Length: 362
Image 1 (cartoon, rainbow, N blue to C red):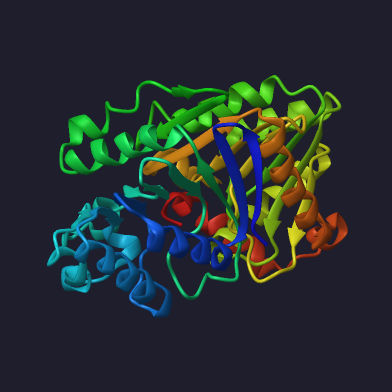
Image 2 (image 1 turned 60 degrees about the horizontal axis):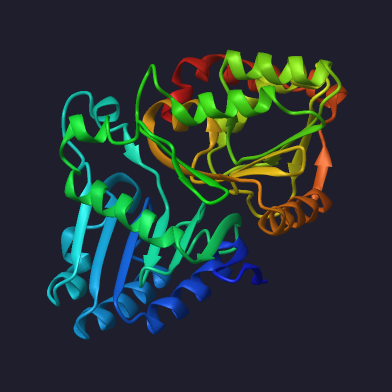
């Protein structure tokens, strides 16, 4: 269900808990657009949902609106001709990092644009976890619609990214500053061994938690430093909940994450398994007040190899919507069973150990 509330005279927010709800809202906004449609997305597939968006956006191109799409080549995986209905009417489509057919195919193509941002008419914007695909329309997601002055800032970010998509130096230096807007911080990240801005930002705010830490993520593979930090905070009496899907869409990740769950449980961290179709939301909530949402998973691959965007805030109204989502998610979860974990099969244990060196590929 779409929930929309005033946050001030100049800003409104709505939270979407499934991709399908977000698709409906975004299509409405596209059809009502008068000036521009900018979209940066990881997956834009050639399926029923993708073709519906393609048709809606191409109609706006015909009417002369400024249209810019930035899609990831790996995640989108369609030929350039798929977007001809847009480009032939003046729209611009940029594929991030075309796949390179080399002997080291996986490693050379591993750094991807995982961001999900939409800006319409310099006033409406979306940031979140969902993609434009048919198969994931019923997944549990976390996408926020914003009306107000944050839209021009996000538009500049999309434009800067599009204008320098092939400039490696620019891509690795344009995100040095965290952008502030009212009560929000916009954190952009890029592939790096040393920077990992989102991970380091998480470490800073987790250390400041006074009462609770809530993590919602489809893929829970934090490195040693984050695992240790969470364990230390739990031993200090901080209430920590981690919400993950019972079975994610990447089963290899499930095998790896399961290796660590017993240790985290013994440290006092509460693991909750979502029983629905798939939990794909990405949220960090501190003390029920400070929230972070966006595109980044809580895993090694997002922190190390992906272009990501997260928005932090401490606004009570939007925070209330996010907390409602967490509470509703909790109702569809069951707790981690340590005794069952200890009895897991030898095959499961071996798979988990074997895949650890390849954790950044999933």
